[in-house]
Image 1 (cartoon, rainbow, N blue to C red):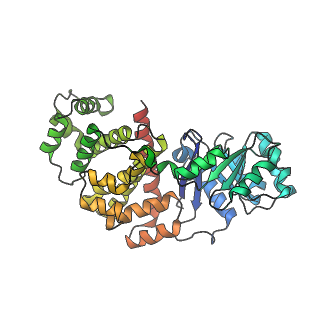
Image 2 (cartoon, rainbow, N blue to C red):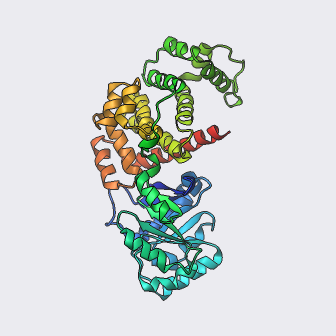
Image 3 (tube, rainbow, N blue to C red):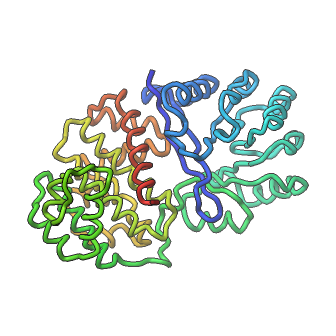
Length: 407
């Protein structure tokens, strides 16, 4: 059995990561509403316990997981630790005595309870003493309805509100003003034009290096010259290549030697971490993690397609696909200033070419658009069974890079 799951980050008012919602499907061939919700929840629990540990998907953050009435009554949530999971009651679940008893028991055991895609009805008031989070679909709920829900819960100050499908900085600010505590959606990856800035000279140097290393035939002389022009970059390269992680027999003392010893793949990883850390230093860390995950996932997809020579370009396409949100400028303006191949620019801007297909599959996976993912998978003649593994590998790789940046 293959474990298909995507994740969506949940951030607080300071744009700090507090957890991930996990979104499950049986396969790319079998998408909702054709999957039974009880089976989807049970498969997610089984997969996270047996096929892939939750920590691989969420690190040290809790997983927000949807539960049906039947899976709650059967005690599936209890197979996970109280700190590992936020129990989301699906919006399709009808409130009643069985549900109330299950929720009360979980709350007494220390679990965090959330109501998903909440639509107000008086009967839910019986659940308020045991509810920690109310999730509201921002796109499907009017401001007046939101204010009414908040008013109805005023006697329960411990209840916190989470806005789902928040996709722009403007929506985020509006939800903040209404008193929301948590936010789900890719608003943090969108440009805030009022704060736009350009790439600094050292960041342009990194961009140039990324371009050079994206070529299957790297020009070692040219890359060496770029490093030698920047003392700070040279220092970081030498320090990285001399680190204990590589267990060198002899110390590296020149730029060219460091590049040769590292090799193209390790150099690319080094540059991706460095570039992401520098240009996104004032952005939520989750944006950096998303860039790195996209990069690695796109690279692995290109390799699965047998296009090994373009895997480096796929990597760079994925990594730069959110550069507009990092620099708070339009994508056209940013890419016009970067020394990138036309193939990469066309993929990001116009969604043309095979690189654009990889990026489209990556994006579909992020938001669990499984039908779209299947269409692209079929177009690229990819093996559906290998895609979840590539996604999970990309997540783990990104986590390792983020850990390296934090040290």
